[in-house]
Each structure stands twice: as C-alpha cells, then as structure tokens.
Length: 370
Image 1: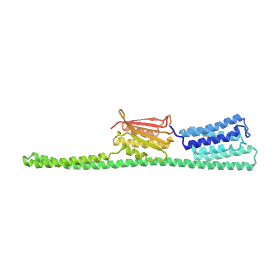
Image 2 (image 1 turned 45 degrees about the horizontal axis):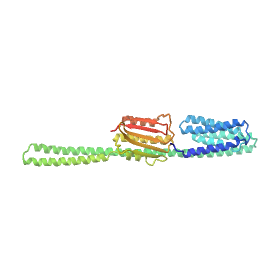
Image 3 (image 1 turned 90 degrees about the vertical axis):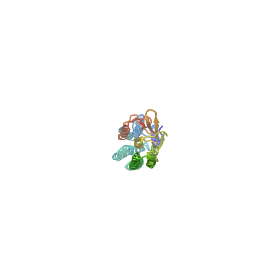
Image 4 (image 1 turned 120 degrees about the vertical axis):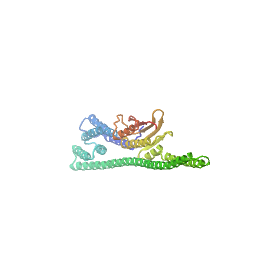
C-alpha cells in the first residue's frame, strides 16, 4: 500500500485553505453578481478540476492534467469576478498560479500570473474601488503569485536534482560492479593462460618420462616412473589451486545486487535472495542490469518510497526475479525504452518478463537455471 507523502499532505492542506477562503461566500457573506448556487457550482468546479490536474499529473497523464488545469484557471477567474467583494477570495488565483509551476512549461507561468493579476484588478474595479486600491491590490497579488511560484520552482528543481542524483548513484554502483566483473574476467583469462602453459610443460615432461620408461626394463624403469609420479602430483596440485582461484573469482549475485542498491537517496530498497540461488556469470550480469533499470524507472516514474526485490529458485522455471514498489502504478502499462530494454535482456538468455501496474508496479522475470 502506498504511503501518503509530504506532497500529498501539502496538497490536502492547500485544498482545505481554498475551501476555508470560499466558505464565507458560500454561506451568504459578501456580495456576488450571480445566483449563489451558480457561484457555488463554479467554485466547486474550480476545486475539482485543480485537484484532478494534480492527480492526472501524478499518474503521468500530462495531456489530461493540462486540460484540467486550463479549466481550473478559467473557473478561478469566474469565481473571483463573480464575487468582487469577497475578502481574500483572490488568494485562489495565487494557488492556481503556483500549480502552474508543477504542470505547465516555464514560458506559460508568466502568462498565467499576468492574466490572474488582470482578473484581480478587474474584480477590485467591479467593487467600485479607487484607482489606488485597484493598483495596490493588483501589486500585492502580483508579488504573492511571483513569490509562491518562485518557491514552487525551487522545490521542483530540488526534486529533479535529487532524482538525477539517485539515478546517477544507481548507474555508478552498477558500473562499479560491472567493472569489477570485467577485472575478474581478465584475471580468469590470465589464469587460464598460465594453466595452459603450466599444464603443457608438465604434461610434456610426464609424457617424456613415460616414453623413456617404456624402453627400459628392471631397476632403470623405477626412476622414470617416480619422476613421472612427481610430475603428475605437481600437475594435480597446480590444477586444484587454479580451479580454486577461478571459483573464488566468480561474481556473487547477493554481493553485487546489494552493492547496486545500497544507499539510494529517497528510496528504501530491500533485497531477498534465496541461499540456493547460484546463477552463472551471464545470468548474474543480466539480473544486475535488469535491477538497475527497475530502480531507475522507480525513481523516475513511480513516485515510490519503497522497492522490494526477491530472487528465488523455482522447480519448473529456474531463477525468478520479483520486484514491487509502493508507487502510483498504472493499470495500462505502456513500456518505454527502459522496459523494452529490460525485456530484451531477459529474452536474450531465454527468459520471460511480466509487468503489472495495478497495485504499485510489479516486475516478474524468470530465466532458465544454468
């Protein structure tokens, strides 16, 4: 279940403030130029469309969010113009201007602020105020809008930088693991060459000793057989040592994955790997790359606070990787470049991937045991 974050609480608080600002007009305080039920419907529409815009944006539906926001801006103008003597009601336009920092391109924000200021000036003029009052009110709300929008832009920028930092963190950790594996591969190649040279020399000596022994009889044979036995024992010892080094150099899935996901800013990641999971090098590196892509997608798109990763052996399918976050999810999963690349990696080793966005976002990948 997704946790309610600070952004959600802040949005609920803003919605409560908006209701409090409009409540006096709803109960009959202040002069309005349209029937009060009609004004109440417009005000309610403003709250609904502004909330919908934030929700659609959170779900990644940018087009719907922009349409809802545009409707909310217009309804905000109508709300203020229809109640020219309603105290702090123009504060609603400050909130719609602030919302533009999260939803619209930067070039649109000044337009919204200027239009909102014009509507506020017109509303004050409808209340038969002096030019000084009109100018002062317009200036005050212009400054309020500018200040709140700049603060919101600073928050958006900080969130973006934090997200980019987390993505860079994951990429750096993965690159470190991959480089370590590359170094191990070079070391294994060096050991293999040494083993080839060593075995070639010793096997040649062993063959010569046995060949000489075939052409001798009696006590002379014993010396050659003993030397051949010594060569064979040395060869066996060297082979065991080299194989032990090769085994110790094999990449460890648990250690590698833990290194990739450790200390990711803003995302709590837990990893469970069954003790009997022992994939080969190719599967290990594929799973590491898949985990990197899943973590990056979670940071970029899910809005999640936690990610759970499980790797286990299954009797009929091989190694199964399951990840699930507590983010927004999406009933209609449309894979982008990242998810398509993830699927291609799994397909390349004969596995399969299932995606489910109904409750958070879940990825289930299975690869044949090797």
